[in-house]
Image (cartoon, rainbow, N blue to C red; front, side, top):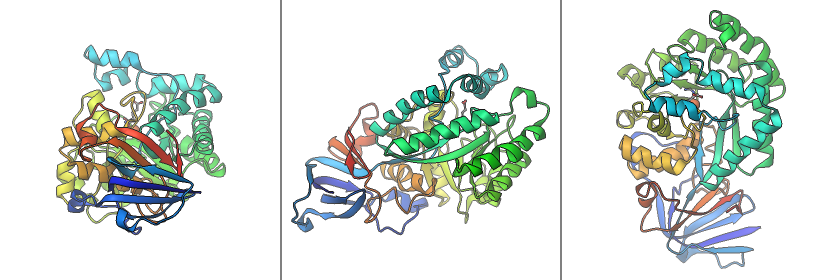
Length: 412
Ligand code: NIG
Ligand code: FE
């Protein structure tokens, strides 16, 4: 099956297929082709170039993209799309003056979602979650990481991971799965942290590995959640089962967590609303990428990740949605890119790099996703007619997507 997209006003993120991520100064440059074509064969990008080199073939489907922009689908490397129910009461409580921390201390927050999840059947969780997945697909996301972490019991965590697996089997979007048993301490382990970590390591991890339910392991390394030492135990245990870590860290406080994550070869460190000079030093010359989640900062009114500080240090940065019921009930990557530009002072070029190729790196899929490169997955966004790609973040409240292509097939 061949699909030929012709007369593309501007084709974004065209690269050789050997770049795994872009960092620092390189992020300011977004390689593009004007007046371009892309040829898709089955689920792959077969060829691309300028229209004067467009092959004269009779493709099965030809799409005229005159006036439109084509870019690789968003790669959203951090979400919690699988959950039960919502937490809109906490949203109103925050409007009335309570902080995220105060709500969590009253038994709200992650434990509130865990209570709901453990009471909900696997089928019902699947049905609720698939609607969110369908929504993010329509918003241009072509690859997504989904975490567990609202079970906090063996059954609950397995239930979440099985739902993620089923979503991956039933939908054309690429899904990576992360085990986040270390999201919060259940009430009964409040005074027995090592007991819960033993449960994660001795009971949950072996079952998850046996059923091949996770690609990565995560923990919430934060004051009041998992300490540096506790997170190190989780990272070490994960590694024994081949699970590389992607860690929630520096959301509210900096406690030298990033250095520990780098030491344990974490693929990504996510949140980083608070970043010290030591954190920046720890990330230099490492393979660990920083992932910023601006919709979370927007929604719960906390600082934005200091993108300029990270980029000016020459480090790469990825952008993700953090879609979850507590801090970010949105998986809209167009909004993430716009908010990164508006609030974090990233240029459109930097933000698009961060939400495509660098997002792919943060899921370890940059060999196959995140850029327009020969041999990569045919996952594309075709926009409505635009003046320039700057309109993507500029028109922050508009839906500028005309259609999305996943695995070479037009979805919407
Ligand atoms: O990434 N910070 C930790 N975890 C989630 C929020 C969890 C929740 O409130 O449900 C996050 O923001
Ligand atoms: Fe998160």
